[in-house]
Image 1: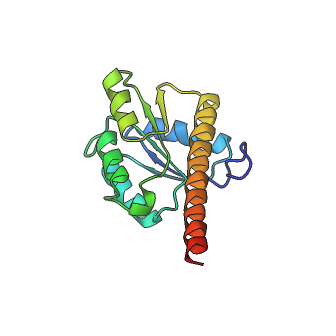
Image 2: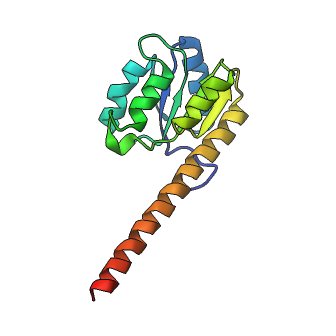
Length: 159
């Protein structure tokens, strides 16, 4: 996402069990300019999508309570690299009807970038996407810069 307002290049995985919510969130994403959206109905269906993307997803939007594989289980598999090591740092926004502190705390422990309580608005989703993706990009840039400096220091000390 080059321009902070341009979301057209984002590749998004939407994990939500309720068809009407998948459709509404998808429509909100389309209204924001996001065109590359894969939607699945639970974490179990999301696993092969993440694996096939091999680090190519820019954002995952995920519900918590779903049949077969709940959102927190999916997120745990994502974060520990069990699905694909190149995808384990993909930004995740949780969208849930659950506002209990335990869900929020566990989500934070698993490294989510955003947590939204249903119902959501397109404007709120846009803000959360921008902050989640830009925070991830800033971290990735910072991490890459650190690696470059370490390599430069190693080369200069070898000379």
